[in-house]
Length: 316
Ligand code: UDP
Ligand code: MG
Image: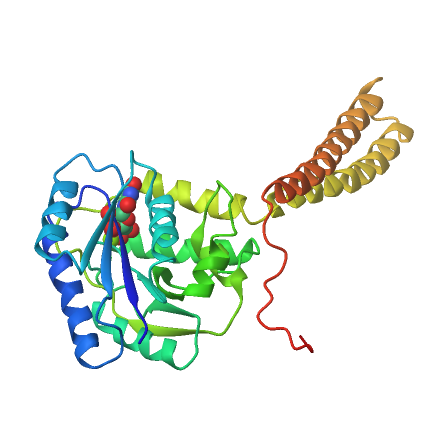
């Protein structure tokens, strides 16, 4: 029977921890009774350097349910993406599949069963996708949806309306651990792993208690990080703008020369205006060109796995 590990990053979540623990243990027990996961399946809370009582609550839950509730304490706050990665890396050696979910239970715990069913059907990654965002504020909804569109426009493949609520098999977690980059955007990496994937759909709820740990500033940082760690398109844009300006400068040159020969200009104007346009364009083009190389160095420096072999058929 397959062991499930539910991985939950927590930052200042004292208000929701007990509720989350109860709900997730409920899910485990239900799935154990239905014979879908092994009896030693667990919930693992990752304390991301919380300043409140989160860790002591995790310790308390662990002493109450030592076989079901586990805890990992990070030495300081590293942010949601790294906290989740730490959790997945610890969990991958202990379970056959993991489900990552936020502590605030905004994601529907009821669809974990569907995820596990899909795992048994042979899927390695199952994404939790939000049906609609009626419970989010208008602002959060439009900024978040704009974010997915921008990401896709920039060439970063992500699953639309999917956050970090997903099931991963052991081998998917192992491959994920091969991505050792520090500019970490998990949602961009997971689709690169490959394997058979699927989605389950759910309605996103409001936070059970406490408030969002993702204010606008952190959201913008995540968006920028997502784009800059996956795409060198912004650099290509600069090169493109440079090329356009060089072309424009040629048009400007024709205009300036015509004005010069028709004799309606001040002396010196033609050479001045031509130099400004042309040099500006050439400079942008060169910066873009240098940028292209820097972009390549950036990609090389990540040492990402270049492929993921799923199976080999041979005579061995
Ligand atoms: N979180 C974390 N470290 C941080 C910020 C957030 O581990 O520095 C956790 C948080 O406890 C929650 C999850 O990341 O379990 C998502 O955060 P939140 O629900 O506040 O984000 P939102 O749903 O508002 O985007
Ligand atoms: Mg939340």
